[in-house]
Length: 388
Image (cartoon, rainbow, N blue to C red; front, side):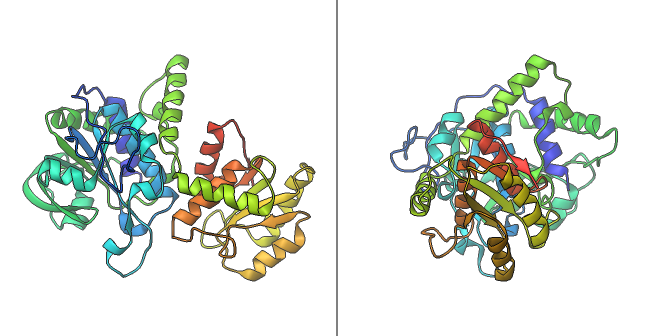
């Protein structure tokens, strides 16, 4: 489960490539018309880095955490990032009906200021549908491509037909990476394998990191100290680089405007209210209504000036919501269908996040990636957080 996280960490630690600067152009759906750095017909240059996750699990905060790591990796490797689409629903319908472009969720212009990026469609056009090297575990190769690797840390020669988020490509070679596990010697094993991979990938224009079963790794914090010793100066530099990468994933402006609209509707301004995130359904961090009410009541008592609480919650029980509304001594507001102008799956959840980021104080869940993203965004603007 920790595969792609460890892979990204080790690659970041081994990165030493110097490459030709890439174009900042993008197509519609990845770069908004008129955005800074966008020239729709400019030639796209590599080398490229694409990364694929288990997209059928839908769009959620594990996906955004995964994508943040890929952004960091592409920057370190000085490669043009292939920006993925996101699957916003988990249903039996065709995938194409539910794949939505990056620009539906984040601002392409902000990403363009950080690194060159390209849509999947333009990546396919630039490469002729050929990927030079796919990096995957034998398990991923078996499950996604229905092939058997010749052995660990060995090359499976192509051509091999593959898919990248549903689009057809041809892999010239697949490197079967040996996943060493999480034991005490795992770090050195990753570094050794990654150094070998870096040497192999250096001459290739198009490289794909393919992770199939990566649901659990994606929300974990990127910590380069795992893979290399760092002095205080290097650590401070790393924290600065992390902040720059996080700022590159700026929320879509339409979502920001929607958050400001509902705040005006509720008669409050940014920084004048409290916000809380409550998980109730099918989650390790789930709290019962009584647990949430007890903790939140005490938290609010320390903030008597905040008389409005924005509640972001996944609970489907109206009885639970009614209990919370009755039990907390403040006005509670939620981004629900009676006020929401944005209802598309994934996008509405990001409006919830934005409203939590805009609050003066925030109460979240320590083991939730939804909370984790909010905390990171709040940290960017100098705001803190408390935890249930």
